[in-house]
Amino acid sequence: MRVTDRGVALAAVALAVALAATVGVGLLLGRGGDGGPGAAACDPADLTCVPAGRGTPPGPKASLPPTATPAEPATPDPPATPEAPPPPRGNLGPVAGPDTTGVTPGRSLSPHGGGELSDDGLVLEGVHVTGDLVLTGHGQRLRDVRVEGKLSLRGTDIVVEDSEVGSLSVSGGTGITVRRVEVFGLAGEDGIHVSSSRRRVQDVLIEGCWIHSPQVLPGSHYDGIQVRGVDRLTLRGNTFDLGPWIDRFNAAVFLEDANGGNDDVLVEDNWINGGGFAVYVFGTNVRLVDNRFGPDARWGLLYPDSVPFTASGNVWADDGSPADLD
Image (cartoon, rainbow, N blue to C red; front, top):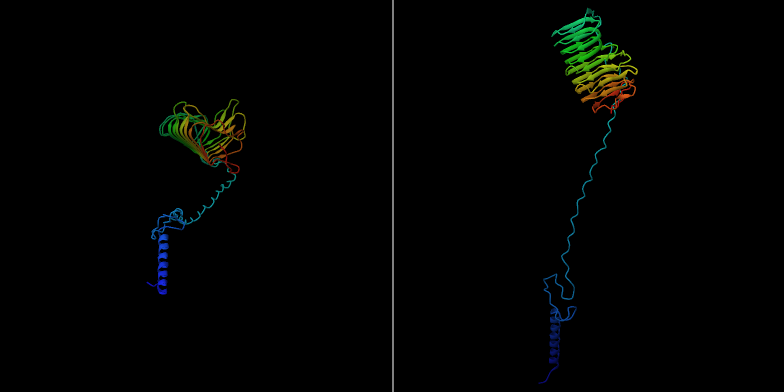
């Protein structure tokens, strides 16, 4: 059979098509290229597939952390304004004196023999006692009385007001009130002496009194007030003025550890001046509040071996500056 030029051309085209198909199938089956012979084919739908020999497929893309919203800066507290100290109160003179204590001006006094008075409910007014006077009853009242010697209170529920005495003693008494009394000094005696040597002294108020002008003897150990055992004592608004120190002075206020000790003592708003030390403190529940101290204590305001107590508002009388009782 004769082969024509057209037949030769058609045969060449057919051969080229067959050859192209063979190469395409080889590529799809991994023959040739980087995979080398026998390389596994990838599913076109699998985007993570890499033909063998081309490395490990990348893992999933790491997610970025969420962007944090910055917190609003804290507003700092305004700086505290320091509290200004109170201004000095100026010269603070005695709180009780000749114009506020003693027998009512113009009151006439009748002579009285003094001694011991034991009548319950006694009311004694407008008398002048040249010696000592002792009250031992219940519910007794003294007013506008002058006692040149010592007034001793040994009973219960006794009130002494607007009077003048050389010295004052509370010995075993309970429920005692002393107001606006001038204690003008008696040789060899404390201004005021409180003692539980007889029986327990309880519930004593000494208020608005003026204790001054000590009269000492060679053996004296003078105190404006000496307390030797008490339950519930209040000293308020009094003037304890010993004046310039001499070697027979002990203290303006002496709370001594004796006769069972002292408990529940309030020393408030007094004018306190003089003594070796102005104050000795022995007792429990003792408070010194808002007192004014004069300049005449020789060694200091507080006896250094005093026991702990509460103190506040105490000042120097000359300028109102704080008085250190620590």
